[in-house]
Image 1: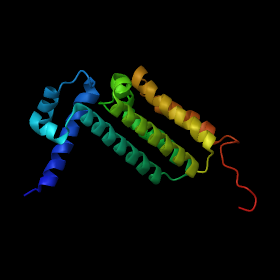
Image 2 (image 1 turned 30 degrees about the vertical axis):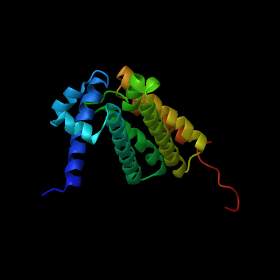
Image 3 (image 1 turned 90 degrees about the horizontal axis):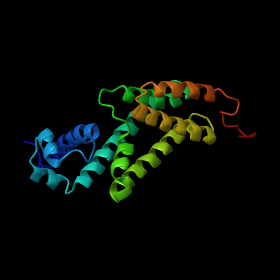
Image 4 (image 1 turned 90 degrees about the vertical axis):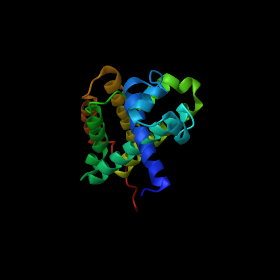
Length: 198
């Protein structure tokens, strides 16, 4: 027999799967709680017991997407065989994401566009994602031996490819960006200089 805690965790996962399916595919404001109830297969009373408000659901959905994305990129980087491949692993992840049938652009940008200016909780969660994601990209590039200045440029290419894929439906945006990154990584100023005596 499942414990109350494990049962609740299962229902939370079931509910967040439904949130992702409904909110991400159709838009947050366009989706109703009754639609979410039907997709999740949970009564509204149970949904509100797990998450007291729609805002709580949105934040939980965005945080789970964030954690999964960060972990997936980290795993690709660890599996990479060279410093250059470690950096390019970011774009490999993006390319796979862009080609998923369910891809509907950046969920954080989408949420902010719909609610950010008037919803402090959603704006804070989007800000958390952007800061953490940029920090991850910077760490990957610097740990691979490249400069922080280059990390800043690569982050802009990452962000640009996500926007291009989402808005222009250019699903090869990550591949195109990675070509530019390859050129940058082989440039004369790409590597951090090791000071004498170190």
